[in-house]
Image 1: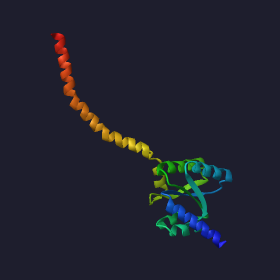
Image 2: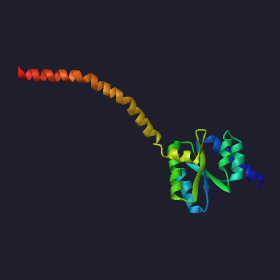
Image 3: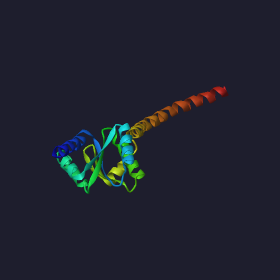
Image 4: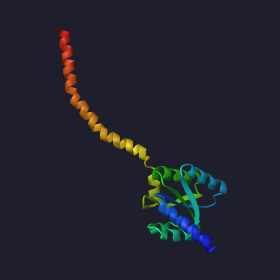
Length: 171
C-alpha cells in the first residue's frame, strides 16, 4: 500500500514539474462517464487529468518549487488537469467543463508558467484571447502606424498627379 502511495506522489510530482500549466479541481458526484468524457477530451488535445487524494497531492507538491499550491488541496479528493501547450486554450477547456458539470466540478486554483493563481485568476485567463489572436493584434498595432505614414507620404504625390491630370485636360 505504501509503495502505491509513493508511486502516486511521484506521478503527481512529475506532472507538476513537467507541465507548464495545471489546474486544481474539486469534484463531487461525477460519474465515470463524465470523468471519462473529460479525460478523453483533454487527451485529444495532448492534455491530461489525474484524480488524487488531497493528502497525497500536498506531499507531492512539497517536492516541487510550487509548495504554495498545497493550500488548494483541501477536502477529500482533487483532480489535477495539466497541459504543456497553450495555457489559454487549456484553461478555456477546463472552464468549459466547469460550466458543463456545474455543481460537480469547480476550480480551486492553478499554476501557469510557474505562477500560482487563485480560482478567479484562472477563470480570468480563460477570458483572454488565444495567443494567435494576440500575435495578430500586436502585428496590426505595429503595422498601423507604418501604413498611415505611407498614406500620408503618398498623399502629396497623389495630389500632384491629380493636378497634372486636371491641367492636361484643360490644355
